[in-house]
Length: 391
Ligand SMILES: Cc1ncc(COP(=O)(O)O)c(C=O)c1O
Image (cartoon, rainbow, N blue to C red; front, side, top):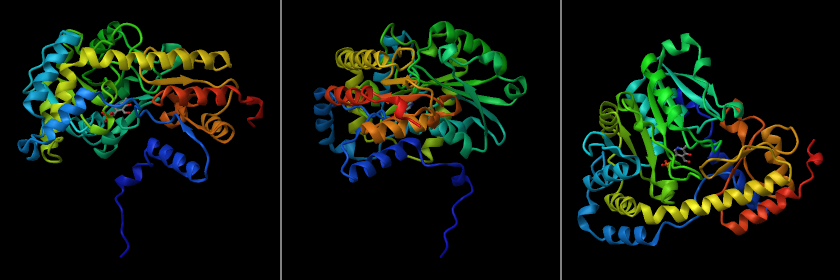
């Protein structure tokens, strides 16, 4: 039988990072010693205390039953307590917090609860690709909002056409930013919330890298008075606690949006394994001892990597956070050409900026989620390259 796949599926190219994983595997299969700095997948093992807690929780029979879609109360309470300590914000664990099977899952589902056919969603360019998923599936339209180096990779709200604003329902943002490493201040969020209220736009701020900052702690958009009327914020255990494989994230903020997302999810999934939820609750409870050493590792890696790249002619503003460096090679060239050049001549795989959007063209994203020895070797290989060899 000839299987006919859906029209909707045709809207999707293979996910950028899956393509990069495939490239890495195929190069390794040829026997090449590839160092991949393409994907942001933390190499640092999850803290011992979290793992021990999970092992203990796995043994409890009660945890073997179905979890609750919005997450167990232990974790939701721990999340509320953490936001109080970290941002001075009180979220009611019942209707302002919901657990996700990784923040990617919630990000992909959110547009379904707010967008109707033809509604517009603003998406940064360059962007984390998942912001597009739910918009495309819900029949919405995408308007790309440039993040340019001359604006410190913040959106220029005044440049979004009025007629686009008139049909815009949702705006996805992400600070500390993937892929650019830029941060956002509370002043920026204040202006953004004012602008969003005036234009009737819901804000979904993705704070996956909120605890990998190199200067002042990254603020939450929800610290802006009144932001809760129109915003939700996504969080992730993946980078903060190096728990990417455990698949836990959460959403906090506007209760109507949080509850609507949960209502949709009740019809799709049954929540993450309770043993894992309880391990993340442990991580949150011990955040202040677990996270600073992780942040320090990323900062040291970033400083060393930036210094060496700068010395060999790469151009870029240093990141304010995240585990990425977003930089332009020593010669003017296309992102993909530069990636293929580094792969062929230095056996280092990186992510092409153009894969994150039109405004990423000319940039390369380095991910610092490999051990120091590998990063050092990758730098040795990259900084030895003669870029005049790039045709
Ligand atoms: C900006 C951003 N948001 C969300 C995610 C997804 O994180 P999670 O592992 O919680 O699904 C990532 C993962 O790389 C990311 O870079």
